[in-house]
Length: 107
Image 1 (tube, rainbow, N blue to C red):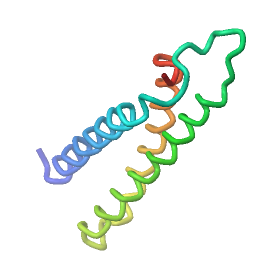
Image 2: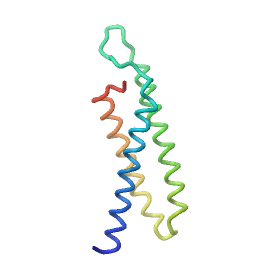
Image 3: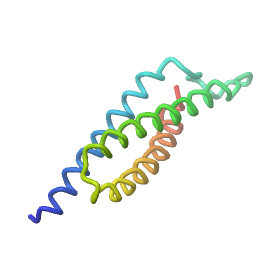
Image 4: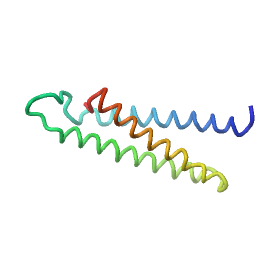
């Protein structure tokens, strides 16, 4: 296995670990927010949207912190590759948010 491919697989593993830790961490942290039964006649969507927006903001904060740490750890010639992982993380955030909305109903 070439060194470049092995490095990419290593960073991909770290990316998956980051996504899982942030998702389950935010799910645990925000578990008390929102309304678990959204299908009541007098229900309002506002508490669930507050939870969704809080999820987005906290995820972006975690991503910003990780990007700053990794950016300082890698050599200058490899910093340009970091944005590919940031874009994948933003796509992952959207997928996690929709998964939470549909499966757990942001409860």
